[in-house]
Image 1 (cartoon, helix red, strand yellow):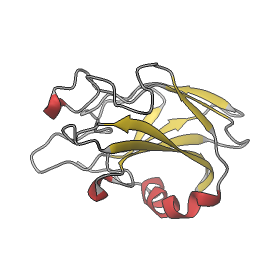
Image 2 (tube, rainbow, N blue to C red):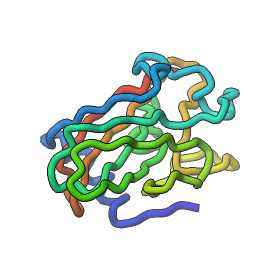
Image 3 (cartoon, helix red, strand yellow):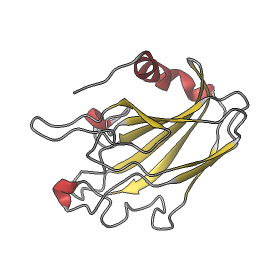
Length: 168
């Protein structure tokens, strides 16, 4: 099942246009996520992942007026899995927020934490289970995984930061 909303279509169109947007600060809350190597067990279930999920994050320096944060998960080493190929989720911000603690989103499921909404499911292979987030799944081929963190106000991106999650 695929969900496409105006925001998911706009996310795709904005990826190329948002290079001039302001940057935010993003930190992983778990030291195992060092941005260099995907932590053991956080790969997809096909490669023996153990309850794989996105890292929880602290996002700061969020521009005034931002209503939500959108997280675009990518495998930049695999053309088919770039531009949100590993899923796109949105986190609603309280009014006036300039920082936010964003919870983990578990992989291979449509169940997401309260305050998070799936914008676009990950691109799956035929016969593979879908979901909001697909954990790194290259089989250890040293692919680079990133997340584009975007601050949105209405249909506009106010800021964007790309963070390296690590290699797997």
